[in-house]
Length: 376
Image (cartoon, rainbow, N blue to C red):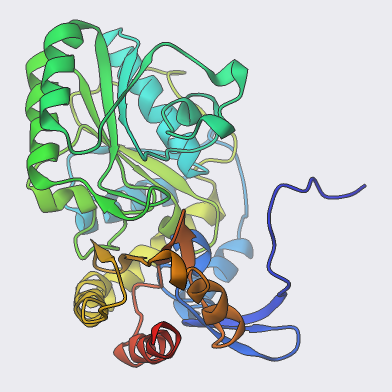
C-alpha cells in the first residue's frame, strides 16, 4: 500500500526536537518558527510535558467517556482559570475541524436554525460543515455544499448589519477567526467583533470564536477575540492545546444546557489527551508564556516593519504574517534550505510565523538576521 499523495513534502526527515529547534536525519539543526501549524506551544519535548504523559501512560492510557475521568474535570478547572472563562463548560474532542463542527451543531440545537455567517478568507477545517464554512471552493466536495452558509466580506460591518436585518431570524451562528491563519494573518477588527456580539445578542444567534490557531495564548491574551473586549458564546480550540498530542475542545457559555447524547466522541478527552493538555496549561502558567508571546511578538513585529522591502506585517503576539512582493517569493524556501529556519506560508506570498510561545529574543534575532540577508 502507498500513501495517499495529498501533501507537498519538503525532503527533510525530522529525527530529534527540543525547545524551538529540530534536527534532521543528517544531524542538521533547524530553528522552528512554525511548530507544525502552530501546534508546538510550549516547545518540543518539554520536560514537564514528557513527565506528565509518561506518568499517565504508566497508569492508564485510554478508556472511553462511559466512565468518570477525573483528569477531564481537572483540565476544565485549569482551563477556566487560565482563560478567564471559569463559568464556561468544556466539551473535549480531537481536532480543530471537529471542534468547529461540534460548535456549529451545538448552535443549531440551541436556536433551531440553519443559516451560518462566515467570512471571505476563512478556514475552519475540512470535515463536512467545517469545510462548508471555509472560503476555499477547491476543497469543498459536492456532498459538502450547502445553501445554509452566507459568506460576507471580512471586517465589513455594513454587510453584516444588512444581512442580519434581512435574515436575522434565520441566522443560527456567526463563526469567525480572531486572526485568520490560512487566510494570511488577517485580524478581525475590534469594532467588527463587537458588532458581531451585539447583533448575535439582538437576534439570538450564536457567536462562535474559532480560536483553533489564534487562541491558546498565542497573541498575548488567551483567546485573540479577547482583545476586542467581548465574550463569545463558544470558543473552539485545538493545535497548541496539546503541544503535539491530538486534543481539541469547545468552551461553552453557561446559557447552553446540555442533554445526554447531544454531542459525543470516542477518543475525545482520553486520559493521555488530558494529561498533555494539563501539562501545556501548567507550563504556560508557571513560565508566564502569554506575556512572553506578547513581548517577543511585539519585538519581531516592530523589527520586521523596518524592512522597506516588506509590503505589510500583520498579526499580534507570536502569530505574524509577513507579506512580500512577488520578486521576494523565494524567501520562504531559502529560509528553510539556506538558513535552516522553518516558517509557514499563506498564498500567494505571505510568510507565517507561528513558533512556540517560549520563543526567545535570541531566536527572534537569528530569524531577523537571516531574513535581512535574503531581502536585501
